[in-house]
Length: 453
Figure 1: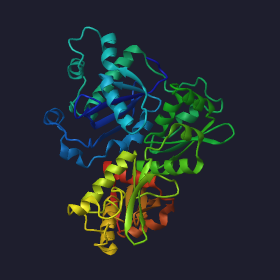
Figure 2: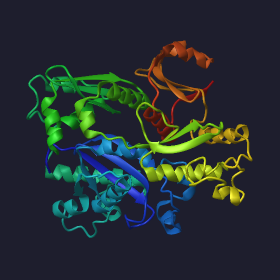
Figure 3: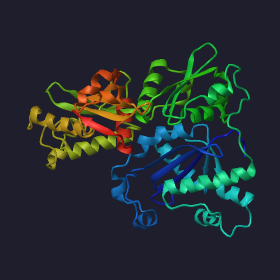
Figure 4: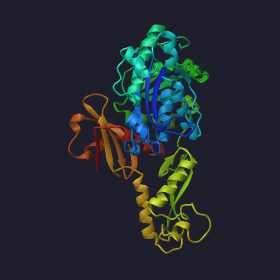
């Protein structure tokens, strides 16, 4: 095995065996350098189809468990960022890889990585085993796995197996200095913090060329410096002359700061490597008769949509869903062509906004209810979480459903009044991406407190 690579050990659970028809229900990713874990990620996924009974019997994952989980498109960008420049490792890796490629293909994105199969590697490096299935092989090698057929448990067992195989095939170096700028020393990298935050790469002229975030700044920077998987990765690595960072304490703050810095500075390698997954949005506007109309369209940077989607099909499907759920008008929402009564009015599912039978005052209340339903749980709240050290907290503010910014408050300044956070919040611009970041993060992660006001 090559020593300058980093690896993404992946395990997924699915609704079945056919990547063309079935969907992912759980994914776990462990970033690894061959001898230690660098970062971990796992989440249930809402497959948007029913989970067969026999799959539930095997994995323990049922429809109720995934009902509130993120859909794949909501974590798609995070998975791309975690696996970028890595070799994907799995036990029967083609199974996991084929499902990932199928999910991204449905979003209009080509997911492509090198792969390494620990089954094939095990047969090569530890021949003569009675079985090379993950469960029996781990048992024979005294590798524990208390969560068999769950993504996180199987991924960690695969990681332990991978460490064993890597130790047989050779130990990696922490940092490969081949091709690095003479301005960039090993000691500079070794002094980076192993904590949540945002990191910055600069070229020899002092120009910012890349911004990233990680729960372990040092490990992620080393991953970049060891990445020689593509021409762009090598080019960026060779152009790095300086590294800077901002600790954030909270992963949510890191995500928000990274998003703002990329939009503000537009670093060349962020533009080259990242592509927005949320290309369509749901917008509302008032027509000449006073009715609120909903419209799905391509996202525009200057306008903040009420909700963002990965594809036009996803946007249209959601618009159909909320039109039916809240008894809205198909014609006003652009889902029924022509003039006069829409089809739903003819079957009693629309109250007649399309014919003027329902007043705009009453109709608009349901439109606003539909829009609020898919925003945050509270219109006004602070997200309070860990700070950069033990004597402070991080805080994110949302007011009237609009992101206001974030900051850090000394622990001895916190009172029973949530307004105590206000003066510590630094203002940042609101946009569709930061709202999606906050929604997605709160749906998948626990924080110290969500404080409504």
